[in-house]
Length: 133
Length: 409
Image (cartoon, rainbow over all chains, first blue to last red):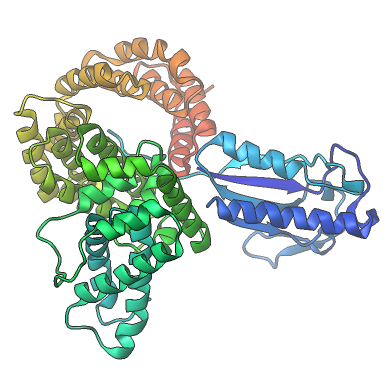
């Protein structure tokens, strides 16, 4: 089963300061934690893809009716906290395992090394149907 | 590794034969698989450059044996060294044995301690001869991820060394043949579920499952459940050309263009299951094959022998106690006795199946047929919201929309 583990720019439940205000070693520890988690997922044969997305500051919204030129809106966006910050796509045997990975990601170390309690959205990726008999 | 001179194809065929020879001689499955992979890699780089050896099988076996011996020398495990010392010297000119090792290798890949999801990729490489890259592409994961998945599966088999020795000492025990069958069945389903017909870059996993099951059947011609499994695969695969529309959308069995079914597969599957059932030892694969066979024999959907299918689902339900079988029996009951009979059967299922998309979908179909369009719309929408299956979701959403337009609210 495939799951997308999503995190956005919204408030984290530890209410810690935003990353640019952390000590350099805390930022380094956070980044190393993410790398280590990805390495573990590769070693377990579960990682399909993991990506961080460039920030809301450089995001664009595009709307088009298919006839006229597209309407392009540049940031900043009032709802930027709802924008996706990054994702992991994992291929695991059970929902429980996906939740376990999400829990690990949620507990990433933040300001002063305390867990940042990042909410992780766990969404199953759709697949194709089984045989009918 | 595409060399364009048939080397890839030859290596794919010889790899499992080399592994079989090594396992029989040295009795160490996981090290033999490592060594075989290394020999295949050496061949893929050297043969195109230096020319293909006169006896490719002997070349591969020699290289793989050397790697295996090297590895064991590096390894301090005394037991394994003694095994090798006790083994024959290997001076005789190696040639592919008359025997096929598919079943033996499958049994080694599918111990009960390994989940089918872990066993399948290993079996595809060790027994199917596919490369890690091809397997990764078939499952749409990166090659590094798939390589790790296979090496973890092997680590688990290595840790449970006794199970592998049991397989070698006493091969083809019925319960092991049953777990091999289960893994092949899941491999077939994996391929069937993901095939879109037009995607030629992905390995045909269903075809691979059929090929391996044929090989297992050739070794166990008297096992009616192996015959039943092969029949089930062939009969189901026969529908594949009609199963998806031009844009990959799902076409349900009842609406398929039956002239596009593969009649040769249906004929072969029917002959197999008829012969198996004649042996008088009925099992779940034979029953499912018989059901698929009844569908396959119906030239039009309305010609389907639903009373016979209803009886068979009843039989299958008693064999497996699987709530999904009960769900299918409810569909058959509705066809024979009317939608209300089907709906009655569903009532007991909520507790066993929970809030399941298939249960909502079947209930929706039966409610529509029973003349309750509004309730059917609610159930179609509930099913669409819960399915983890995109084409099914599109199909169910369309059904709800169609009914909503016909039903002024």
